[in-house]
Image 1: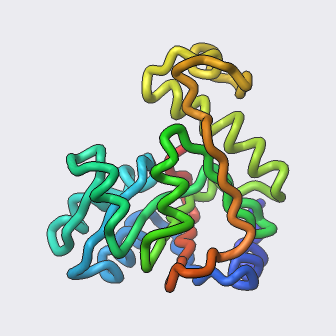
Image 2 (image 1 turned 180 degrees about the vertical axis):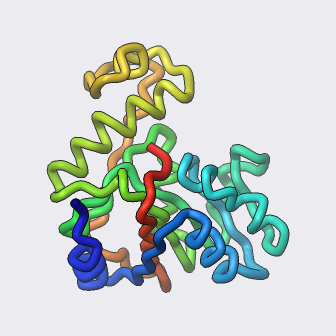
Image 3 (image 1 turned 90 degrees about the vertical axis):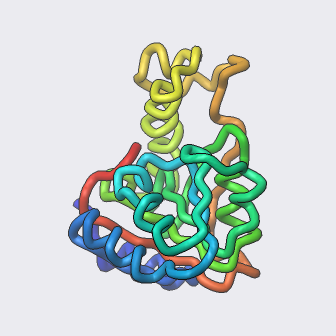
Length: 196
């Protein structure tokens, strides 16, 4: 059972703004209202896709998402960046694993505002459990989705720390606190399961 109040307190203590919503629809409405008349890009995130944010934001912003066209270089130059996490510890650590590095890089540098949208399925009790979740739940599901020829994609059960040329787990970031230099970093918590 997630203690949403404790999670919020822990994240705020680490320098993040936090908003919490009961539904994905409420979170999408909130973000659509917050991000207006600016440049925005999104990481490769099933959570962001499930919220339908690209189409909504592209109607009144200059939006870039490599899944919908636009380059990673263009995405790196926007004012606002949207992503999710592979694991969020109730103690406040945010964990992401990436293959190319564009997503993890954009969450720590280069944008004025960063929003993480996090469904209840991504929350784990502590750092070790959040890291385990990122490696053994999120990464195999993403490898399967991408059709990779890796042991985790074939078996779908855990990370094998493989040396496959198609390995998608190549970079790991842990945000212990809000990075310096980013004006606004916000965690949007959703009390529903979203993404992997």
